[in-house]
Each structure stands twice: as C-alpha cells, then as structure tokens.
Amino acid sequence: MTVHFRQALLASALLGGALFGAIRPAQADVTVGAILPLTGVSATIGEDMRRGIELAVEQVNAHGGVNGQKLAVMIEDSAGSPVTALDAVRKLTQVNNVPLVAGEFSSSVTIPVGQYLVKNQRVHINITSSSTDMRNVGKYSYSVIGLADLATRFSAKDVYGMGYRKVAFVAPNGAYGQSMFDQFNKDFQALGGKVVAKMLYTGGQSSYRRELSQLSRVKPDAYVYTTYGQDAVVLNRESYELGLNKMPWYGMYLTMSTANTPAEYIEGRVGMEVAGTGDQGQGYIDRFKQRYGTAPQSAYSSYAYDSITLAAAAINKAGSTDPAALQAAMQSIAPHFDGVTGPLNLGTDNQRQTQPYKKVKIVNGIQELR
Image (cartoon, rainbow, N blue to C red; front, side, top):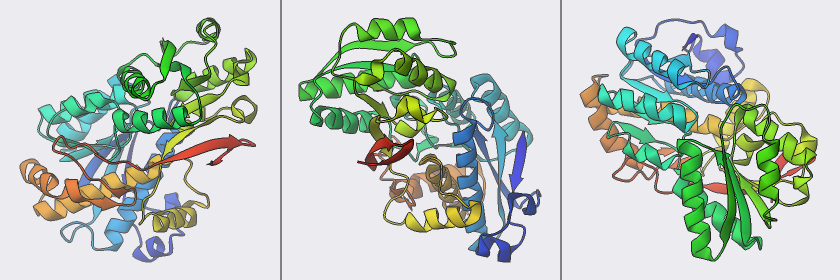
C-alpha cells in the first residue's frame, strides 16, 4: 500500500482542521520514503507513526518546504514482515528513486531494511527500533530513538529502586529481545540484582501458558518484560489467567507491551516509556490533538515526526536529493538536531547518546505517570 502525503491547502494545514481525505494524493517536487506496519499486529502504533509523519509534512510545507519545493513522504506498509519490508524498500529505491527512507518499527524488520539502504548508499532513519545491533547497520543509518543500552540502564535502576532483587525476564527471541535481555542482565547485575530466569519466546504462538508456568516456579520478586503485537495480548492474558499478576510486572516500553490488551489483564502494571516530547514538544501534542481530535496513542508518533523534519533539514542543507550530498548533510546536521523529542545528541556511530524516559503505571486501564 502506498500513500502520498502532500499539503493540499496551506490554510487548512495552518488551521489543523483538514481531514485526511481532504489532503489530495499528488506527486510532490521532493519525495522521501517511509516503511511502517500499517497492517498486522502493530498496526495501531503504525497508524500513530503515520500521523506523526503527516503532521511533519504539513509543518515543513507550511514553512516553505525543502529548497523552495513541496515535500512528500511515500509510505509503504511492511505488515510487520521483514520480507514485505524488503520488497517495499526495493520499490522505494529502485522504482520511486527516493534518496532516504525512514522506518520501520521492530528491530527484526528495521535492521534488514537499513542494511539494504546502506548497501545502496541511501540514507536510513531508524524511528523506533532499539536493538544495539542498529550500531552495526552502517554509516548511512541514523537513529532518532535511543537504543537498548540506554533503555535497560534506566529500567534496571528503576526496578532495583523499587526493591526488587530477583526478577524473571520475558522478551521475544530475536535481535530486539536478545539485545534487551543482554543489556538489562548486565545493568541489573551491576546494581546487585539478579535475573533468576528468562523466557525468550518464539513469536506468533497461540499460547505461552507452558513457558509462563515454568517461569513462575522460580518465584521471582517481579517479572520484567518487553513484547509487542498479538504476542503481547496473549502473554498479558495468560499471565493474568495463571495468577502471575499477583506479583509485580514491569514493562519496558509499557505502551508497546500492553497495546490492544483488555484493561483487566494489565491493571496495576508499571514500567517505563520513552518520553514522547522534549522541551519543545508541547506544541506538537497540541497540533496532534487539533488535527486528529485525540492525543497520540503512543510516544512513537513524535519520533516519526522528528525523522521527517530531520530529513527535511538535511535536504535543505544538501541543496539537493543527491544521496552523497544528503549523507554529507546528515553527518553535519543530525548530531546536533533538536526535535520535538529533544536534542538527538548523536554519537560518532549515528546513535542517540541521551534519551528521555518516563516512569509509568496503568490505573483503570489508562497509562499515567507514577
């Protein structure tokens, strides 16, 4: 599925009241690409990210576009599949000839997409994937979100600070889950805690009851988990049905880990979440609410927004969409770029060195600060 985003009427964009259908699909003067999970188990978050991109395009074009031309983002649906995402990135680069692609969502999909782009010397912007393997994708790949080592350091300190010393760890068995486990285990041990059991599950199963039952036998002080999509729904439901919710559950990226889950299964769960906005972010939240009549459903829409405003800034700096010129511009602009999520503060590996997080809990089915 391909969607072209373009500002149709400057007045309607400035008012923030235009409906999506009123923004006419059209080929803009400058087009970049994005790959998002618009269908499949992560579609809710994918739609939130799509809206962030749409707002970024409107904002860029309301302020003169890029090099005096209108900006558009051609979005392809990954359906959460590496195979589908690779087909999409080939289309974007070989058929549509875009100089830059942002996306995807999960590390197992983002990494091969980024590797393909780097191999073909096209700029890649990672929006949400936090596996530390992102550092090995290559010099054309940039992350607007902090990687797992930043997230686990925050989480380990938070969990330890709540008094838990023996925890069981649950995550998907892949680049993302393995990275999160390795980093959390290291950070938690450094504080004096211990991961007494781990469950790196194979995704897509209809039940994890047996694995959860085995995990409960070690009698941890708390369960630390990170998951997404339909697996999250199954794990949350079955842990509730098995009575494991009588012990504390701590979700790393709690929004993702509890998405689409009935409130009764996740009531009282605590965790951490990426902060959706930095010091300059409130204006973004206000525009989002005005545009869509609701607040963002996740923090990830703002990171999608920053990926496109960063791309626009780099194109302006380069003065063209020539891939080599764009890469040189990214090297100059990206490390010091200040977006709605705060200063990126990228290191020499093009990865974020600092990342704002927040401590959250679920009360009456709603996530709030704790």
